Image 1 (tube, rainbow, N blue to C red):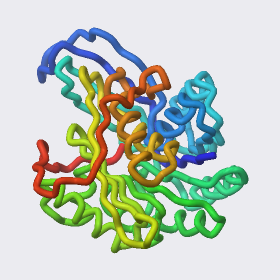
Image 2 (image 1 turned 60 degrees about the vertical axis):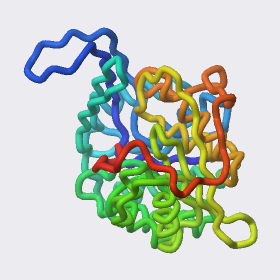
Image 3 (image 1 turned 45 degrees about the vertical axis):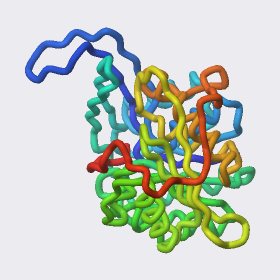
Image 4 (image 1 turned 135 degrees about the horizontal axis):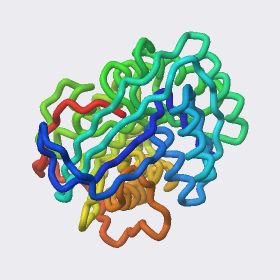
Length: 324
């Protein structure tokens, strides 16, 4: 079983519009409300594909209760921790050409006592688990080293720890030697301070994360695919590159979470797991809002995996983009 921990879950409202115009009254073509937060999405993707998963998350206020109702309606196995604050709400504006504009609330602060209760809830729920995924942005006032401290605690309990976050939280987490980190292009550039323009740069930057403590790095590159840098079984690092055909993209929201879920479901090592990760991620991009793909949505026919060409340029440059 795979546990997920989401310290900053959300209600995610996606509104499809014809075009975004500042200062104008815009009529929506469609709208949907989904449970949100990176760890929540990983659990939802695993659930949709009949992979045993359990989500641990704090909740507060009417928004938090609505979030729990939505997750219960999906049948998600979860451990919920009531907190004093109010669960955040996020808004995504989606245009027909695939352009996404997101407005994310900061979330609610968590006290030291609430964080300790959440950590104990993870450990209590972990008797059948071998992975715990700690992912997403940190709520206000939560220390940047929280994933590092939690990671050490979970590792002592025999859990393999995967971390998907950004900025100082990602850099701090490396010191706890997580089994896996999953940065996107922006997060990889931010954590290493490197300019990343080609696949060779991605592999070099991923190597820096491994040198800092991460055992495996799965770098998601958006439309450019993904790079996996991990142990080849002999103790030496080995890099693989993969890409997946998308066709008609609807929304990239949650695609990285679906990718991480697919990687874990696929065995969390080697090219086969990378292929599964890319297939799940591409399927999520073809769906509206932050809906997670099920078996009927996932196609592996358009996925290609092999050694990376270091000279291959990336089509997009990194820019600052926080984890949600």
